[in-house]
Amino acid sequence: MPAKNGVDGTLYCYPNSSRAQLIQISAQYGGSDVKLASDFEFGVTNKSPAFTAKFPFGQVPAFESSAGCLNDTMAIASFVGGCDLRGGDEITRATITQFMNMAETKLFPAACQVLYPCWGLMPNNKNVVNKGHENIKNFMTVLDQHLLNRTYLVGESVTLADLALAVYMRDLYTMILDENRRNSYVNVTRWFTTIMNQDEVIRVLGQTTLCVKPAQFDAKLFQQNNPKQQKNAAPKKEAAKKEAPKKEEAAPAPKKERSAPFSSLPAPKLNMDDFKRHYWNDPSEVIHKYFDDTFVDGEWSVWKVEYKYQSELVKTTKTNNLVKGMFQRLETMKKYAFGLMYIFGDEGDQRLAGIWLGRGGDNFFYEDTNWTIDIENFNCTKMDMNKPDEKALWTKFIDGGMDDWEGKQFEKDHIF
Image (tube, rainbow, N blue to C red; front, top):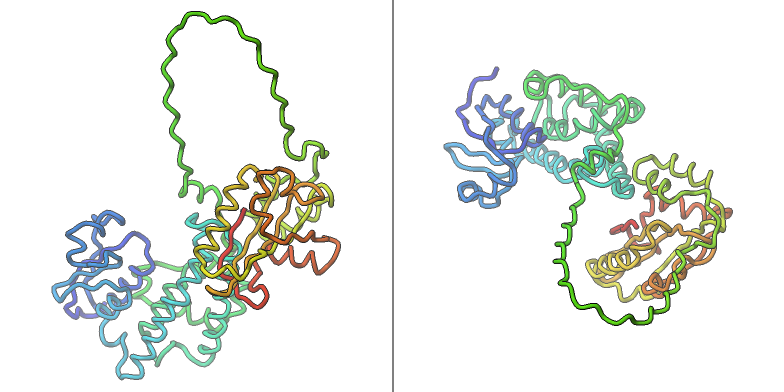
């Protein structure tokens, strides 16, 4: 155990935070005495007047010591870790800071996009998850080349650069990066296991077990973490007072019952509930197999839709509201259709387009007059699933791989 350097203090954070773990490991190297606040309750403690008086931003991790209060992960880790972890000269310190910033701004957000659905903290939005995987792959590829002839990221010993990246990478190595994926980053894996086997790291994290089978989206856990709000039952009306009997009046003519949408069509082979269940819970291969095995042209149809007035899409918030409003007005169509609407491009130069699967062989939006309000503003093109290029567009949307439209980069997606 390294000698104490005199930095004592209290760390405020929620349990199992990788940011708090980074600080605790840094404290092991610096010989600092960092105690976790046992009574900290996220969302309560950090909003209290006593807490915000010391930490005005109210964010965590937060560190309180006799020297002062700090409210940033990397700043706290640097303070409790001591000069050896920070580097001995200006260029070394700057390079270490560079990697720490990359851990926070590049690696951590990408890891969250992939891991949060597995923890039930975020819906299984395939486009977001695929973007996360792509960003992780790009980051790891560059890092693997950097570590080709290096044991550590900077210099010849462990620094904050190593600790920050390795700690933020740990959940990926234990939950996502199985042996097949690790083989693509042999230098990063060698370095990662070196850092994880340091005594100071083991004291905080224990032994690290590498992933055998990648974790998947947990629908049940997501429902538990995001329960639907129960609607309050309407108060019972008081019983009406008895009145004197009135003379009988002629009964009104019975209203003609309206037939259900698509009631004239035979039962389809593809079940929309099953398709949506596969989309939210299963990998792309399973979704495509179910679609290919059950889709019958005429029972269902696939349509490409493009907004007619693209030049009017100047604000992302307004474009989002346009799609949300459309989805709300189509609520009664949910068991007959599935849709993906994507916003592409920056504000002032945007595109709105999507792909839909709906009941019947004709444009299903016109089955009910309540469904036509918004679709009149779109150009609709029926897709032939027997044509490779049109089937490829459907596949790309389902896989979450639509990165651009007419040269405009993907910005936001909406799922119906």
